[in-house]
Image 1 (cartoon, rainbow, N blue to C red):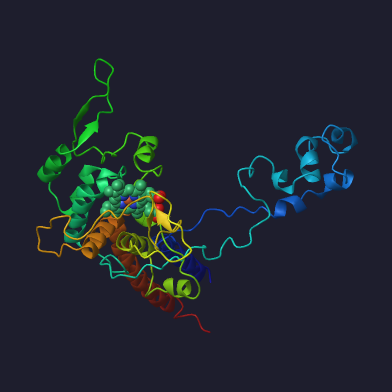
Image 2: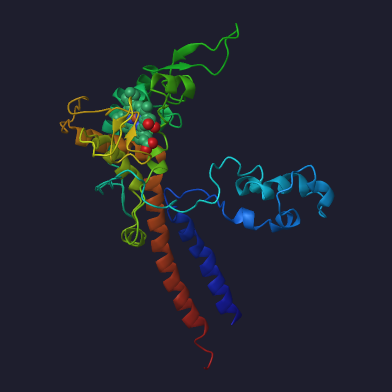
Length: 358
Ligand code: HEC
């Protein structure tokens, strides 16, 4: 019996890597603020001072010292503030209704595209990543940074050291080491540098873009996803579906989704551009960044908005998760190993128990 237990334990230990190999769900929101529960949790002071006595008189009457200062006025007057300092930033207390409802603007669902890196056997299309880099460099980099990607990482995109050195040298970066006179001089980039951001800080970025700072794109493909709703999200987690491309599909949809046909009842503020795919409102401060024939491809790939959007989205998936393909490949090897190992264990078990009469 002991042996069997040991075997089971061993199998458990070996199976645990599978759990780690699973992809974390994208776009999971952080905690939901729960504002309704708070007022109900503090009924005592309200009972003590039912008329909402001013805080000056409360301490004397309240039998619980230490809980007076904050609670007494809160219970009497406004329940919103009774949760104390922590949640005071939440504007409206007690109204969680409608929180998960479809936004008031007509949000369109991104089309699901075929990506080479999707699924358990996913792989990068290196040519596509190279084209995406080109689109980023020639179009997006004038507004968006890519501050978590170093030039040396471009090795993954099939570039050799010389090419990376030449590429890095095209950028001007601010040195992190001060010179002898205490200034931070500018110098040409080297492979160890990270892509420089186009603006010195987010205030400058916002000032140049109608008040909305263009976000850094390094992790954007993992930072965005559109809610799939029931029952789609149930199918998404099935092993043979494993839909994890919500972010890239969103990027592609956003870049191709600009339209002049604004539905009735939607007001597009000055300096913003209508896009039914934009997750946070009907319009965003980014004008349509690319259009047909804007970037020259050397490999004969069609120079269309559609193609540019696919390529730059795939590239941004790589920047967000450079080890995606390695991770999937490792997961596959682990699974195959597990299957072989489990069969071996089973055979060992039969052998060990063969002489025991039962
Ligand atoms: C003219 C400057 C400019 C250029 C060029 C530009 N963007 Fe933007 N981008 C912005 C601004 C400004 C915002 C913020 C919009 C907002 O929050 O209203 C933004 C936001 C975004 C977002 C975030 C959308 C969201 O869901 O919050 C993505 C993704 C994005 N840009 C991708 C790109 C890509 C890819 C390119 C290159 C093809 C590009 N941008 C080129 C200015 C630009």
